[in-house]
Length: 324
Image (cartoon, rainbow, N blue to C red):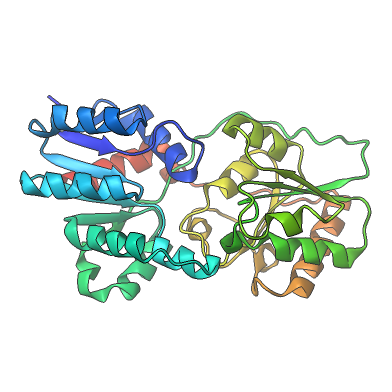
């Protein structure tokens, strides 16, 4: 009989939802999952199974998920939080502060029995951020699902296609990439930006070389990656960065900031693959130029991921952490 219950978005295309669906493929025999997102249905499903569960795992933050934790604690259930992001930090970049949600997030972190971060980099940050509960933090790196994906770049095209996810969200800092591209004055550069409009979306759309997609199904995001030469992640802070691994599998070269958890998972990263200063458009422009020159010489970088980071192995590690 299953004695663990998984709470999380199983329908959307956000990072946490993709992670939840990936874990489901390997943990459906160990956890009871609620696969619908309707609030009333989720509440009913939770109470229907609560008394039979030993452990409640919450994947992703919301006020409702916090209340699920409080109810589970009342019934003396073991509680685990799979932590994908830190709202308090993200709001600093957005320059908007929802004090109520920040307080709920803090209460959740102090309430649960264990917190599993999605990367070692993120875990280290949280231990330093909240030393009073540092003993609660551990981590399991998000996994990757190997898939057959051939690069679909038009060999007859003179365009060099750059792609980024995160839209106009300030934390992703894609606007600075636009400024860097504009410095190169290269009409053959095209820039695809995918994600929510956020604070910077309207400014990003004004650049003539930009194609902006507000929302795309995950399968279509992968198709856009297949048609791209370079993936850029210029985030100020990224707890993991699953899109980077997907871009690599689609044949993209990568240029990423140093504050990203996935750097511990991806092999073969060199100095030229990192952005040292997220706000230095001159540095970003120079590194894009170097990537273009490398591509023209038919020497585009290829990266690899260790098999221990496949979803199958991450699932085994997560199950182990939940059983400790």
